[in-house]
Image (cartoon, rainbow, N blue to C red; front, side):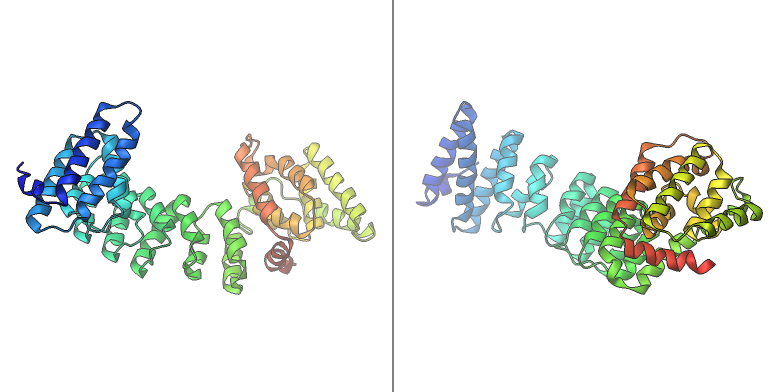
Length: 383
């Protein structure tokens, strides 16, 4: 490489000497290597900031490319972090780093303003998903690049995009992310946390996400009013009455009448009498008299026997949590009821720990007002 032209420049020559000396110190290793690596980045920045003609600039680019191509990954990564913040870096230099291994390319892909739309498209088409994710985190992304990333159907890339609040999504992009979010809670979570997601999309997502995200939606979007409440209701109503008549635990009319008569003898429903009733139900469950328990539960909760079966059959205890919270049943009593009714849910199968954790999460995050509203809309009106 002929750098004679650069050596004649009064501005360039001292910088070239500094670059050479600093690189030599870095290559020698030892205690000074780390400081020399940082200083190299500063010298490169200075070289690129010098105002020179196009020919001199091309020579500087060639020289720096030669240095980068021979450097180990640690130095390339350090230089990439420095150059990623600059606007006046030659495109050839930036692209060389952008196509490097990901630990080098990452900062360039995330931050460099030099990369054009076409550059980003080529990188997306020729590199793996880890490169797509870095691009998805950029503060500014044209719609065409966002659409291209979403078309790849990579969940991790979609997750990063959904969480990038610097981007304003088009309707097409939102629809694409919505489809991805329906298939993955990891995508749905950051999408739901955005401040600009339409409530109509929240309502649609409610039907597809897991239980923890349903609770998150209720906490964050509970104030959206009736349209949202109907979305919650619909999830419950999808199961109400289904399969209840086939359950071996459905009590007879005579048993229900008998338990109802007993309930009329009790005086009111003070906290003391509620505690006594709960203890009786716990004892009934321990004796595995499930038909009797369902009858007691039906009368106590003031719902139909069919709805009792449906609620007690739900794997993660959503309906049970709503009913217990609506009737001010304490957490420990909810836990006992949930654990002791496991045979009704699983046909004697062993319950997994995650099942109880989800039930508790639902109970803990459900507020009494919402629980009572759901109870009135979905159960009490059936009598």
